[in-house]
Image: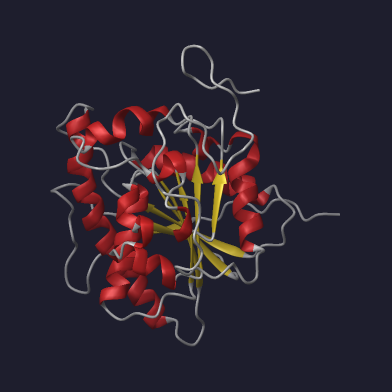
Length: 304
């Protein structure tokens, strides 16, 4: 007999700030974190992406939280949610806004890094194991938080597991073909870093590169590259960009639960060379997924 699903405890809203002042991002509401009043083996932090309101983000978070509660996984975890100003008040939605919000995501990541550094320092005797689950441009927030920990000599490698969903970051920032970048160095130190991707993500395939004025390569969340940087890369076809938070088929919540039950994830090293990181066109089957559906005459795969 399984235990009934626990009620949602009241959350304590924590404004991410320094010891003396609140850091406001772009004259907007400060980034906020909500801690659920629980204790457990893991602290799971959900981070939303581009063009998301705070109330919409919380609703999406609880879809995954309820999905985790519905699984008989014996996972003891507290949940932290993070909201950052990804949707400006004074812009209509267009491709130029994305690059501007990417800069804001850098700032939000620094704030989150400061908060994590304080939490790690305060819990030396009872350390947390952090699981950061980020969607889309939230991946920037996560990587910039880890960059802050790296630059401030905070020991984070064995404390963190990272799951990036539909990541709206250029693949070259993770050092394909052995290139040494900041994000590549961080990835090597992490206990676990995984990517959920889908070639059916039309938001990333159509709008990501125009959002950077065509100066960047394709998004990590489209093809899952560079493969040699991840402990695991999961193809989520036929997921669209918003299907991850909707937890279609409970695939995301099941993946999170399964991943946390991996006691010693595969070590990440440059010796783990995946298939070539050269990007195929969107209409070419991913060589790492041999069961890709065939092309239709219009150049689109048919999902069967």
